[in-house]
Length: 342
Image (cartoon, rainbow, N blue to C red; front, side, top):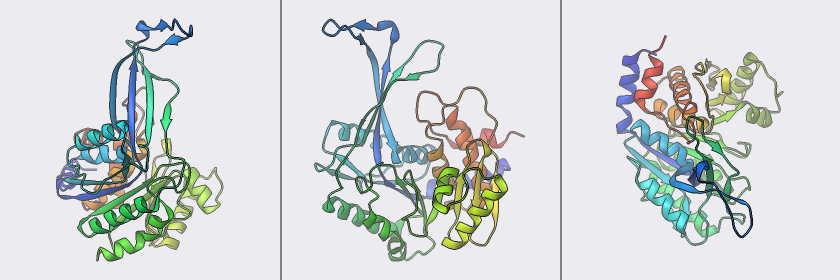
C-alpha cells in the first residue's frame, strides 16, 4: 500500500466510534525470577517468587487494546465484570486505555470477572516461558437481568456508532456476554440504529453457526466446520468456499489463514487475498487474530477497500506476533513501517 494512502486512512481513525461487544477478560501476568526460586518448608515443593504483577484487558479487551493503539477516537466496551478484585483491576486497566468510554460497561455481583492468570518465567537473554495458566470463569448461565442490561446498552449506543465488533470468547454457551438472546438481536440493533450498513463483525471461538448474517471473521478450521468443507483446502478452494458463504449471507466473510495470509470475500463474488508478511525471528501468535479483527474493522470504517484492509491487517498481525511474553498491539507507526517495505 502507498504510505500516503495509509496516512490518509489512519488520519480518519480519530473520528471513529467503535463498540466492542463481548467477553472482557483480565490478563494478569505474574513475572517470576527463577534466580529467586526457593523450596517451601511446609511442602518441599519449589516456590516461584513473583517479582512483578501486571494486568491488561484480555479476550475482547485485546481487540480494545488494539483499537486504542490505533488511535480510534471513541471506543465503547460493552460487557461485564464482577464485583471482585479482578473486576477492579479490569476496570482500572480499561480506563487507562486512550479513547475508552466506560459508560456502557456493566459491573455485577452476579458474575465473576473472567480472568486468565499467566505465570511467566523471565530469564535474562531468553524468551519468556509461560507456566500452566490459572483461569477464573463463569460456569452457570448469565442471569437474565444481566443479559437485558447488556442488550439495552448496545441498543442505546448503536445509532451513534461506525462499527461494532462482537467477540464470543467463552467455552460454555450462555455463560458469557454473547448469549442467544443477544445474537438474535443483532439484525434488529442495526435496523434500530437507522443504519442498515452499520458494520458488525462477529468472531466466536465456538463458531458462527448460530449467528445471523453479519460480517463473519474466522479461521480456516472454523470455515470448514461451518460449511462442511474439507479441512485441507487449497487456497483457491478456500476462496471459493468463502465466496459462496458471503453470497449466501449477503455479507463479507474474512478467513485468516496463519502463514498463508488472509482472504476476504464479498457478496458480489469478489474475493481478495493478502499474503502473510515474512517472519523476522521468534514469534508468539497470541493476540494476532484479535489484531486482525481490530484493524479490518477500523480500516474499513475509515473508508479502506477490502484489499487495503487486508494488507493493513496482515501488517498489524506481523507486528503483534513478534512481541513476546505479552498479548501485543500494533500502532499506526509500526504498521506503516511494514507497509512501506518492498
